[in-house]
Length: 292
Image (cartoon, rainbow, N blue to C red):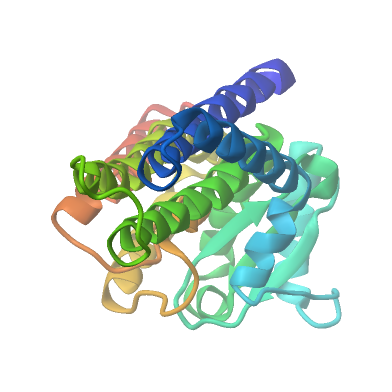
C-alpha cells in the first residue's frame, strides 16, 4: 500500500471515529443540554484534540499502559540481536526495543512511522520461543512497521478507548446525573452506550484483521521461513488462552500479534485478530508452495 495508502487508512479512521464521537455529543446535548448542536460541536472539538494527541503521542500512551520499559542492548542482547537482524533484512531503521513485564507471551510494535517505531516483547515470549520462532514474530512486527500499520492501530486503540469511556460515562450520568428524562432520553442513553463502543470495535476489526494477514505474509517473506511464524503463532495462541494478560486495555488488543485478553464465543467472533488457525493455514500454504 505504501505511504499514500497508509495515510488514507489513517484519515478514514480519524473521520470514522470522529463521527462516533460526534454521535455521543449529539446524545449528550439532547439529554443534558436540550441542544444537540452544542453537544455535537463540543465533542467534535474533543475528537479533534484526541486525534492530535493520538497521532503524536499514541505510541507513548500505549507503552505506558503496558508498563513497557525501553531497554538497551546490554539489558536484552538476544532480543536486540534478532530485531537488528530483521530490521536490516527489511531495510528499515533500527527501532527502539522494549520489554513488557508480563509472563503472557506476546509482542507488538508501535510508533507513527518507521523512524519512530518501538518493538515490544513480553518477558514470557522471550522465555517460551526459540530464536527461530522469535525471529518470525519480530518479522511480523517489522512488517507492520514497514507498512505503517502501527500508526493506524495505535490511533484506533487510543480513540476506541476514549469512545468506550465517554459512552460509559454518558450512560451512568444519564441515570444518576439528572438531565431530561421525560422524553424517553434514557432510550438514547442505552443505545449510545451500546452502539458507540461497538462501532469503534468494528472499525478496529475491519482495519486490523486484513493487516494481520498481510503482516504474516510480509514477515514470512522477509525472513524466508513461513513455518517459523506459524509455529510461534500456535504456541502463542495456546498460552494466551490459558494465561491471558491481567493488565492493559482490550481496546488496544489489535496491537499485539495475538489477542492477549481472555474471552470466548462472541468476544472471539468480534476479535480484532483473524483466527490463528487460518493464519497458520496460510503460512503453511506459503511454505508448501515456496511463495516467499
